[in-house]
Length: 285
Image 1: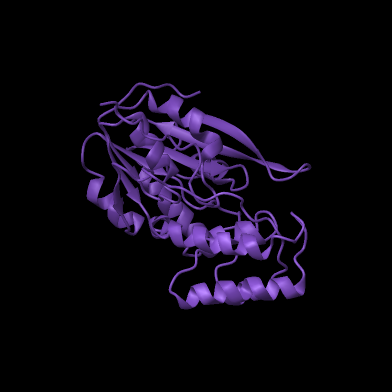
Image 2: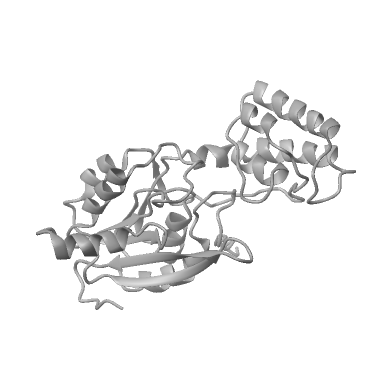
């Protein structure tokens, strides 16, 4: 009997702000310097793409996906989401693609979403990608009613078969999860917090500067991958702290990789990945 090959996702199955799909090649290259049998803990699991990729790359590793943003609930309701979008696709059948939806059609869309909400569940983030302008999201029916709607409806169903297979899914404050594993051997922390000075509207909680600085304590003496961007200036801040105070810089000796992400034709920003194996003699790039 021929075994069916597991699907290797190169992007999250559902829309998610901040997923690391453009970093996967570099991330997998960097993983080769880390143990295949380690415990990998995705402290800010987000869409789970880093967890999924790690498990695919190292099948024997224990991978813990901290789903603090409720992404697994969205995956569990993917059939409901597909049905809702299929009905909206019919409503928008005569509306031009990528154009503003008329007020009369908008009311029909709103009525269908309202009915779905009465039935118990609406994934507003995924829905947003089918009826709002690019990169715009709402989180409630009231917010949706205030928006101008566009026909950007997806033409095929979403699928997430096997996406979370083999992962240990938890939903904890990252500090509690870190404390459970900080003194255990052969642990690698995947640290991808919401970026400082960027839009965090679809995340559950509001992050202040001290929240970002608290996260840096996770990197002290541990093996880690840490993700940030050139918008945050967190690396420069740590360099300043190292030169102006007795405190150390958690990124000293870490490897660094970058990838440029276009926002539109005129602007872009740079994603940054730093990684360090505390048990290895990796030299920084």
